[in-house]
Length: 157
Ligand code: FES
Ligand code: FES
Image 1: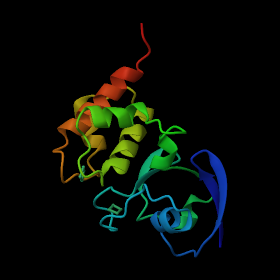
Image 2 (image 1 turned 90 degrees about the vertical axis):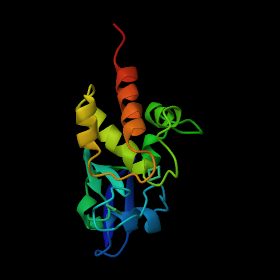
Image 3 (image 1 turned 180 degrees about the vertical axis):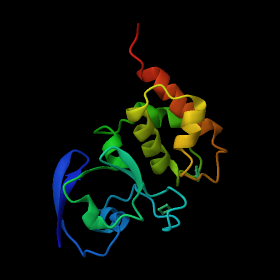
C-alpha cells in the first residue's frame, strides 16, 4: 500500500506492505538507520521517534498509522551538513554517549520533552526518559545533557 506522510519536514510516499512496523518502514524502506532496532517489544526505547509531537516506539506502531502525520527521526534532528544539534553536542560534552546504541532514542526523548516543557526539572527529565534504556552511562550524564540544553535554549534576559 502507498503510505504518505511527512518525514523530517518533507512529504514522502512509500509503497510498503501494510503489516510492517514503522521501525521497518524507516530502516528498510527509507534507509534511515539512525532509528535503532533493539528489543522490538516496546521495552528499550532504542527505536523512539516523534509522531505529531509525541515520542513513540516505532517497533510497536504499524507503518500505515503514520499516514497523514508528521514523523521526526534522529536524521531530522541533526542540522544539514556535519553540524550536530545543541542537544547532540551536549550529549558528547557531558559524556552521555558510550556505545551510542540508545543515543538516537534518548536525543528524541529529550527533544520531545523540551518541545512540551522547555524548562524541565531533573525529575521531569528522568520521567521523560523512563521508556529509554541505556546499558552504559548510568543516566546521570544523559540528564545533565538535556538539562544543559534546556538552559542553553532559554532566551537571554
Ligand atoms: S526496539 Fe522498540 S522499544 Fe525496543
Ligand atoms: S550509550 Fe550504550 S546503551 Fe546507552
